[in-house]
Length: 472
Image 1: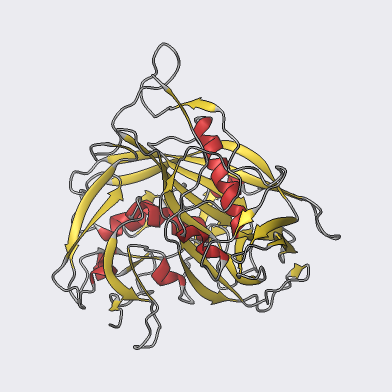
Image 2: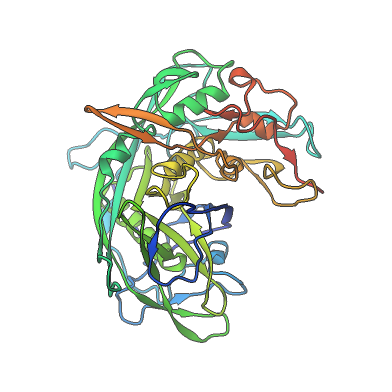
């Protein structure tokens, strides 16, 4: 079995940030002087696939490290639409590592390839395919195919998918007075005991996981009763990443400016939170993903994750000034081009959210549940649906999307989350996962064939009707 070098050259395609206003009413949040007010916009990025290239992104501590503002852009978040890395000087190389994929081990200790999922030519998670015909709007009658994680609902059976989790702790360099340099990820037990992995009762099934409950709700009237998609969590790595206080950014006009890369604050419960420059985050997270692939911590048959502690991404404008905050997570996949079968590592980033920062029950695993459910329904982030309008927008609004991002339509609502008690080892914790739009919402029909005729789940009242077509 050949060994392959993995590199961190990053090619991120279009990223769309769905934002909604939240506030910290009635809470005390301490922060160093910040250009962002207490009223912030929390949202999620939709990240296109990431190619493993032929050169590594350097570390922020490397001499001459410079971040590149995306060409012809007005805001740094558009770096995800340029198809190029945020870092200049991609000259460093990574260590060679075996290309290990789940399977039977051979005498050398490496793992043999075996087909992943049910898509010829791919090494990836198990998947099933389907399609629906749009029932309303300009696309009425048009057929939209989809691919989801798991096994065909009508075939039944339980599909177990490893959930490989790397927890990220932060070491803030040159931290301002009154704050700690160490921002550890202290939420590991709470994360793995959350409804994303622990079982509880739902109307779509007893003692099941959150994403499984939502997927079963979508196919409730067309599935075998024993059909499940189950995540098996494992902490595969714990790392601490140095975060420099300032970074150099080359702006579109060619000038190089010094930008403060993080803003630190303290939530009402005393935990520190970080607003982190998205250009810097792109380098840090992608380097760590590649490190975990090299170390065989991530596998193509798994749902691979990075969990960060209270880390929210902000953008700068083309003059280097802070512009927008805050992105809390995304899902995508990493792949190796030029290889058959093509390896694809399904991946998600999410931040743990301490209470009192965003209000309205938006805390703990809200971001993780959002990204997990979206990855279940659209693991390859390429499922097109009729263009839909965000709920609550005026009829003339053109704030629209045309993808199967099941968390985004609900994320703008004041009742976006649900409260779920989970008891583990005599400990009880109240979690706040996010309600998701069901597949039927995107069909734009008058009725739904999901559980109880719902368009959203677990809160079936969150979306009382299907999507409104985007105004032409």
